[in-house]
Amino acid sequence: MATQVVPRQLSIQDFVSELHKFPEAAFVDTGEILSFLQRTIVAPESLSPYLNWDRQHYTRNLIDKSRLYELIAICWEVGQVSSVHNHRDQNCWMAVPIGRLQVENFHLASQDLEHGVCKLTPTNTVEMNPTHPCAVDPADPVHRVVNPTQFGERAVSLHIYSHPFDTCVVYSPEQGTCGVIKLHYTTMFGKPA
Picture (cartoon, rainbow, N blue to C red):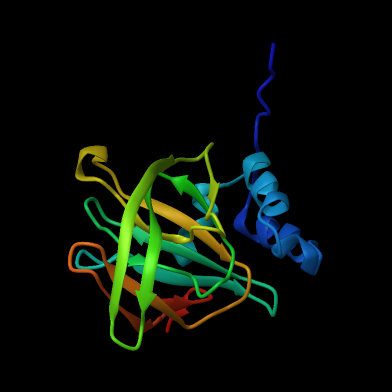
């Protein structure tokens, strides 16, 4: 009979301290950081300095940044959805300490950024919640994050990117188009960006 590991709860400050202990190699493959997220839950109340809500669009709130990674809290109102996007060949891990979210994954069959065209096919959908973090598949990294209306609650996701980056490619599966966009923070270290 399998035993389930009960995750330990850490404040966001202790969570960041633990991330700082990982060697560079831990950010190259997804297994080690994902295992850490499966064993660890961030105490929701400790996130309050980094939570910023906007009824028009989800918010990107920088918590920590080093040469190896950046940690962002994304705040999702009910019904908010990201664009379909990639992470510029960086690994990404996501945990949801508040609420629950869906990750819709896509296979990128072709992409021509110069002409702004692409072909995508949906692959699967994964639910994230406080006990189910996930890592973006480096072989098929194109996805979108959704806070479905039927979930009926706000959500907060923590995103760890293996190296900081400030642009990504966004895709329209319906129109077969794609393009590069610049990324912005809503807040940085608890202060307006």
